Image (cartoon, rainbow, N blue to C red; front, side, top):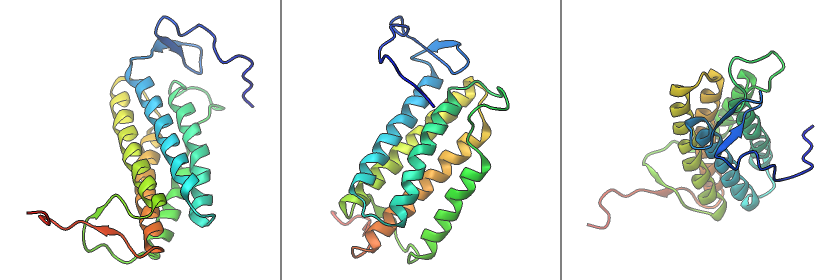
Length: 186
């Protein structure tokens, strides 16, 4: 269990931050940018969760919020590290895939691109999806500079798919997706 006795430590005042193994890296580096993007994605998901009804999707996404902290810890732990390091696992990605499959089975097939809107909960889920995609791009960039757990990238990719289908499920229960109409304002 993590125990924080003091919120400020002054160790980052010179522009560096510590990784799990005690090494220090620049706060401006690609790895810390990726960890920050994951944190922002988790915050966006928290907003979406606060707007969602108590249902199976909310319960599943609440688990994801915890797993996003696991992902941040994974990124902050140099790869390959030790056998007891906290890492995103194929089982976690598999759970996302099972949720995606269940959600997709409950949805009508797409016949158009959809606009990121609809109910407040669905719109917030779309914001979370876009934020997760940005985190994915940051993780790809960090992987160019640092050795990372390959499962971390797979997990974040599946998560953006999950948020897309959950947003669709939330809209379906309120009348359907907001469809894109190409050239509608011409």
